Length: 138
Image (cartoon, rainbow, N blue to C red; front, side, top):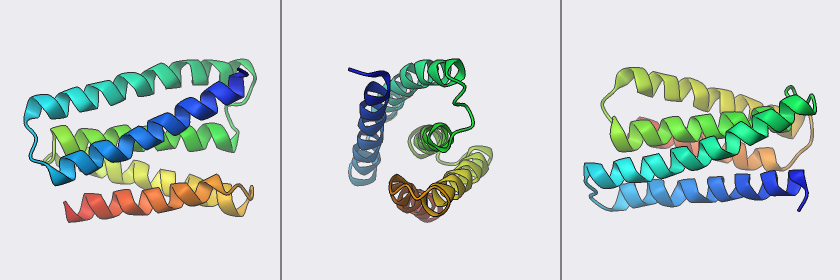
């Protein structure tokens, strides 16, 4: 398996793993230990993805590419969303930090679609809008 194929599949797994966690919290009344466990598992998987991805991007001088920025902003906004949604729903600082990173995620997704003509950015635009809606309505 090539380096890019591994990173692509692992990133898709992380994106697909995020939405059932949000859905689970939205539909069921969960206690703090389950929320902490879900957040910890997602955080560990995200860190285990980001460290090799940043290392390989640094090694191949790919730190300023749109794919790197898109994936980094996606995972940071997902982790902040889970932290504020699952663990600290009344923390205003975390809410404002989350909204900033959701806006960055939206902006990078728009650049990915309109400037680089990559269709994956449409998913980012829709995800950012959905995350902002969840943050405002919850």
